[in-house]
Length: 540
Ligand code: GLN
Image 1 (cartoon, rainbow, N blue to C red):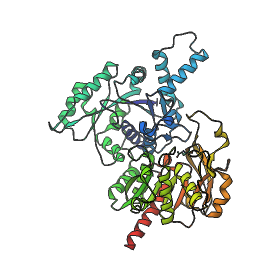
Image 2 (image 1 turned 90 degrees about the vertical axis):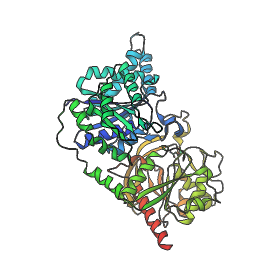
Image 3 (image 1 turned 45 degrees about the horizontal axis):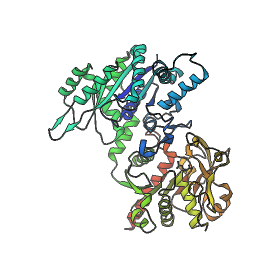
Image 4 (image 1 turned 135 degrees about the vertical axis):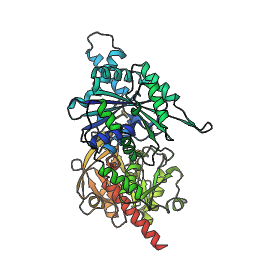
């Protein structure tokens, strides 16, 4: 079968959940036995989101092959249960960089290099890269931004051309928003009509419309939209708010999105998608009654998306353990030694978040001292692990002012420091230790028991490392380095044996936790938190 290309565009407003719709469609097609991937084309000029502050664009996701990617790739992996790569996320910056490199090499043979055809051709080449591998039946391409934005214009032109060239092997799904005006008690479809007009103006007729709405859309309204927008009535699908994003594949299937897509692409759907394991997870979400309270100590607590993958990993773990996740964000800048007890004592487990820079760091030390002394299940991730090491150095090993050289270049105890090869790097973009690396774990460590393995591979995104010169002093003092990279011997995991659960990972396990395969370390942490919560309750 020829590779089929599905384009997902968005209109009216941003943040409608194109990523969730793309992921849900991918889930349905995968569950029908097709080979599917999703890619995201982002119209901004940054080469990748690695240099973007979380305030701009939420969490930066990392693929196994070491690409700093848009957080939507996290959704893709969590829904699809397969890995993405650098090729799954392209930005305008990458497109232009590649065209300019070709121009400098003389590849254009003296031609004037222009947006059409050179930029659009480069976009088209990238759209087809994964499809050309022969590994996929369907390539879903999500176009970032909103129709009508100046910066998405070349992408839409590329989509227009591809639809023309690919015929029935290409299809466009347009996602819009139907607002509800409370004063008038009415749902309004005019913005959708305008948005489709904008698409038509650039020569794209959407095949399917997905309408985001907070209220049920009456059939008459869907018919009206179909009529105004040249779309078949059954291809106007509503995406109503649901309690969990993981239910969206079902709401899409209930309206036959997968069948409509297949038929429009010349495939007669056979049978039903096999969603047994997916439904099992949804049943667990619905059945969970008891709560597990996790506190996440970080500095971006006001941002819903800054710790997206951690949030989802915790949710998956809690769900499999038949619990509801009550996640409490605790602002590290406001956490002092004096208020630690008040802010943390209600929690069953504490996560110390990843991050960069000085802001909020003292709050993380205060939290860690309290957690260590009160023996609360504690999980430090990346900077969180580095903070565990620093706090232990300062308060247990007596190394006053120990620090990471990221925060204090003159610290007398540089327990966290740059690796030699990082010292000469001055470019910020794409130069960290990125992507999946091997880690060998000591067999009797909490981590090894959690994974049920002594050899794991997890993803990294950091510049600084545990300073090996101090390893012996830590080990003698009671903090063990239980995981290391087999090639470089860099420390990957630290633990304090004898505590309920006190584990820090230099890597980010949250990048590898999917609905069908929750990350074992998160499962074990949440399990320990549940046990501790029950223990506390029994003492009351
Ligand atoms: N800032 C730290 C480093 O670069 C930790 C990074 C992180 O938490 N992702 O090493």
